[in-house]
Length: 104
Picture 1: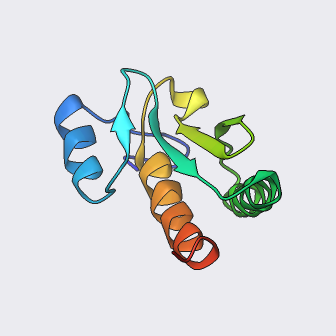
Picture 2 (picture 1 turned 120 degrees about the vertical axis):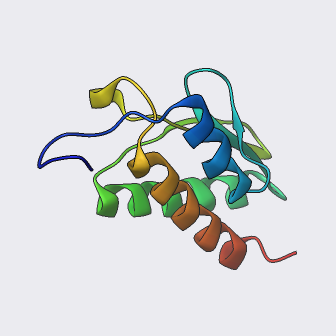
């Protein structure tokens, strides 16, 4: 963060560097996102709730798209109108929790 209350919006190069640390995550021009495959609806909702709780703890809320056996998580910093360190930090935390919950 460049100053208190200010969020530095990442450049394309910053985004590419951040994505190298997040296997399976992509950038669509607005969001970084990842699609998670689950075994069934119950596992999908369990994962959704776990990510929602994590996001609430970080006070940074993703957009999520829910399907029967899929969950798409999309991150951007709405207040900054772009991607910031908050998005990559939350994505890293999501990866940690997903690795625990979806042991395959």
